[in-house]
Length: 261
Image (cartoon, rainbow, N blue to C red; front, top):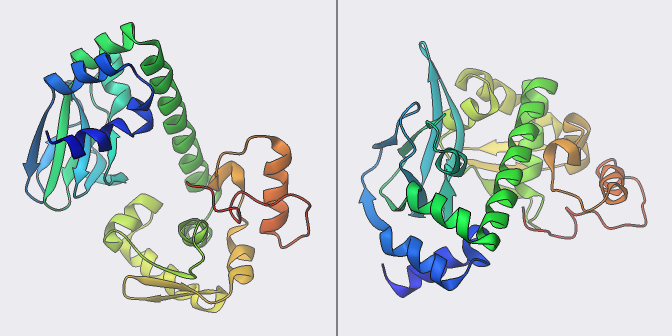
């Protein structure tokens, strides 16, 4: 691996604080490989032999049961998957496939677990990352179970523009993948997108344009306990709720502060 790639991996929160020798140990055993589009990288139920680090391209994490299949997440550079299975030496609970030509660094799980046992800083970073993943899954589950399709789509649009001054964005995946992630059919997603035209969001191909944020917020009822970001204290969370409703507060919301999601 080139020095530039190593520095990109080193800057990830998972590896940032670990000892230099520990990082060198992991990278010495790792190797990188480029895969073509729509190639299955891992299969749910298989042994978690490697931690994957996406350096270029994108990867869909998905799950299947009987004749059903659903998108769990889309991973983009530079980020890892699936840490929990590697640390527990347990079978993957999701499959993964490339969505385009994708370059991945593979770190053997056995080396990952050895460094986890020996390097306190890496162990703490691993716990922090797994906790963040757990909270993300809880949020997504609440989004799916507590909101209808229209509310979920409106909340998704608001999240995508939360940290940006722009009132528009390009949907980063195919609409069929977005529909699966939001728990609806592609046909339902199309109808829901049209229904939001009079509620503050216009869709033009892959571009979404917010035309009236307050009207869209009235549909989604954004909440930090579902939509994030993580708040340092409940006072800030309540302030965020107030700002989301258009109320005056004395604390700037995490969203308007431009915090990184």
